[in-house]
Amino acid sequence: SKVVVIVSREMGYIADWNVFESEAHRVLLGDPVGTRYTFKYNNAQGQLILKVTDNRTCVMYKTDQRTDMRKLEALTAWMMENMVASDEAQSTSTTK
Amino acid sequence: MGRSDPQAFLTELAKLYDKSNKRKSVLVTLKKLPAHKIASKDEANVGLNSSYCLVRATNGKQKISCVLSSGEHLRFHMDLMTLLRASADGLKKKAKTKKLKSSLV
Image (cartoon, rainbow over all chains, first blue to last red; front, side, top):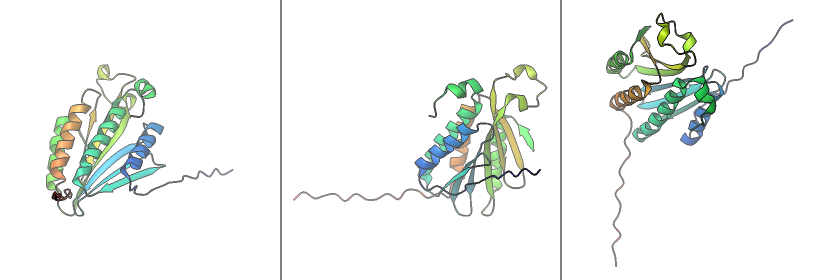
């Protein structure tokens, strides 16, 4: 008998930073080991593109504003903090 | 893929950013790495419940990576952001709007 696995993937750029940030937190905390966070500076278009995905859900944000660097820094710090945290520390920690 | 220590990684990443021109981009990826996945001969330093942060970077041709432990990530983050701020020079600065002084009548 055949087993069919359907994987749904949601993709798209999120316009609002606060929504993107909360979704990014949700994705990482939902699957700490399977989630990856990437950021890319696109030279040609002068854009910063951020992506957080667990291979099921993908949330992305792009900006061409230098002031958004602070947001990138805060998110990167949060991501690193949660990635190096041990499993016990992560289960007892709050989202922010 | 070259696995290096954090400082060497940042040096190589700076070179990647320098090499990237109008057509190339540098992609940096962060991912959690459980301790049991690290193939290390020095098992004494690897805590069973600890986690590490795997940092990878590529410009499409060259790939570099490093692993961060909990004591290293703060300094690394500071240095990484300094490097990124210096490299992402094409971002738009916020235009300053002149405030009109209201004249008192």
